[in-house]
Amino acid sequence: MHDNYSKVLLDESEMPTQWYNVIPDLPEPPPPPLHPGTLQPIGPDDLAPLFPMALIMQEVSTDSYIDIPGEVLDIYRLWRPSPLLRARRLEKALDTPAKIFLKYEGVSPAGSHKPNTAVPQAFYNAQEGVKRLTTETGAGQWGSALAFATAQFGLECEVWQVRASYDQKPYRKTMMEIWGATLHPSPSDLTEAGRAILAADPDSPGSLGIAISEAVEQAVQRDDTRYALGSVLNHVLLHQTIIGEEALLQLAKVEETPDVLVGCTGGGSNFGGLSFPFLREKLAGRMDPTIRCVEPASCPSLTRGEYRYDFGDTGQLTPLVKMHTLGHSFIPDPIHAGGLRYHGMSPLVSHVYELGLLEAEAIGQNECFAAGLEFARTEGIIPAPEPTHAIAATIREAVGCRESGEAKVILTALCGHGHLDLGAYEQYLAGELEDFDYPAEKVAEAMARIPVIA
Image (cartoon, rainbow, N blue to C red; front, side, top):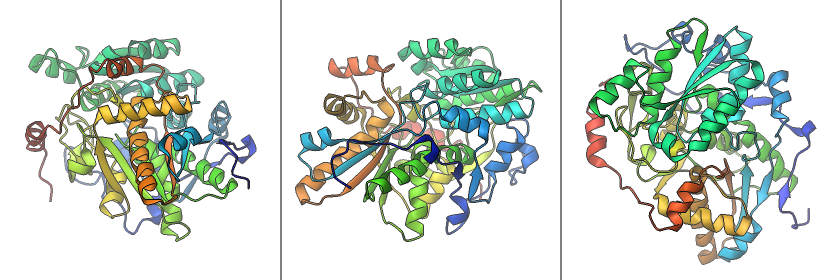
């Protein structure tokens, strides 16, 4: 094919109709979640107060592929297949021989990759008669996506947003309310978990761990209510694999194979969604890309966290999962990439990292915003703060190619636009954005509170 394309599209008829489950293809399965009371492996019934059984079965599935329901495909078609972009202007500005491809998920109604899992989660809950979903959100991308998805199936939606992001991004609240959701800043005085945090620190900036505790606490109190999680768990990463499956088809159309794949990682859903189909191809010997996670320097769970069992929330209401963690009570600094401010990494991403199949690096937010600015000024799209981490790593790789003369193919996911993150860019342009160092003392204090499990 002629090398004159800037965008690679798929027809609706080419959209994948199955999600991919990487677990059966791994050299060994991930460790099981543990019950928070007994510390024994949990069964499906233990998760029933939180999730519908269809999602629980996906969480523990050993099937390589799971069919996407027709009702979910119908809503996906509002924006999927999403485009694969060739960043030619960025390549030229960097004077690099590398080819840079971006799978752009900002075309969804909510402006990010999050509806890829919000829609099926709302569907499966509605199928089982659930009337109301509770959830947490950091930057507001997940809360917006779930508000959109619940509106499609007539469900109520109640969201706890991390206070730091709630204050930084007021229009996320408006977006969620447009789709019918109710939103609270977290920590709030509506839950025992929130009141306990406020009693200790009335000015707490909040964390995803705290917001999860509040949403879970509310979900288990009503029979008509379940909890929805926007990242971390297996079924969430499963739904996101439509990103990587589409990207594989699009790269095949232009006869390209990635040498390097990079993705930003907070909880791991965007990264897993892009990378797992390519990891399948790597494990099968059909390609051999370097696969790299990129996380914030102030919340570096993969590069600085310990791999051990920990709670997914601050209030210790959730099962314990084995993951790279900074401690469930750790409250990260209020960086603008609110979607990456989580104390732990997806157990599945953590497990794959432990198997030596992934690399990881941490980058400070000033370098990331500089990368976002360069990308916006060359390619036109203003990226959300989260994917600027992946763009910064992509630029590092492309500059390395310029210095070595190596013409690598680099693939990343531009997982959302930054139209509601302009306050962060305003601070960067004014020179007011602070780089937060790894808070070793705060992490050590949090890690001391994790249960010791052999």
